[in-house]
Length: 231
Image 1 (spheres, helix red, strand yellow):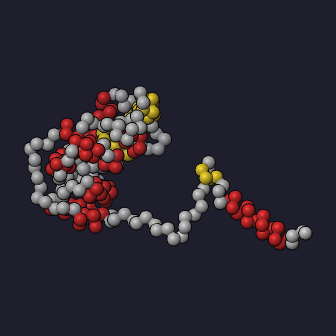
Image 2 (cartoon, helix red, strand yellow):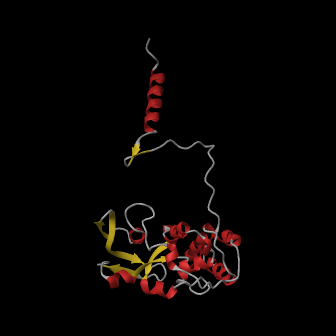
Image 3 (cartoon, one colour):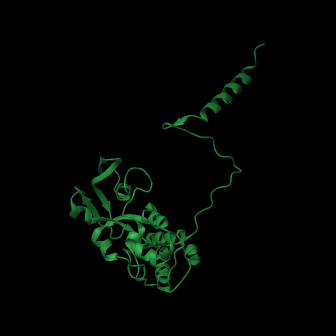
């Protein structure tokens, strides 16, 4: 018995819809839409709220800070074959500007490129980062310096915890070398980047201290609140 034309068309349309649902988009299979009953991920807490949760103590000036306690600089903690300096240089460079080479197990030893220094807004361009003077002109900064972390609680951590902190990519930025030297170990009460970057800087500082359960002192809190006012 021949089916009515309307039923045939509906059947074909239904099968086509099922096929479309798994079509590839730019080489990747598009998964079906999630169930409408699935709970969305909670939004990240606002920096001001995180700041209010930090433990406030009087500022410490420990005399036993030891850089070596954080391990050797720029370890390959993520196991991709490249040390953290090359990872950060590649991540923070102006897209498409870098020249990289294979070095041992690393497929992105960064040789040259262009960066926008977040602290000053200056454009930094280098054509030979194997040249010591050029390499020193772009540095990898710990947003919350290691000495500051030490004074805020890292002196009680294990060696592995300190090594993890020192190589945490979310805590590292490629910045202008002389500017990084002027920052030194200063906290926000002692040193600030350009005004246009102070909001982002304060947010990053607060989230780092919150994530690692580091303390803040009253002058630091006041400076962070002021910088959040530029957001």
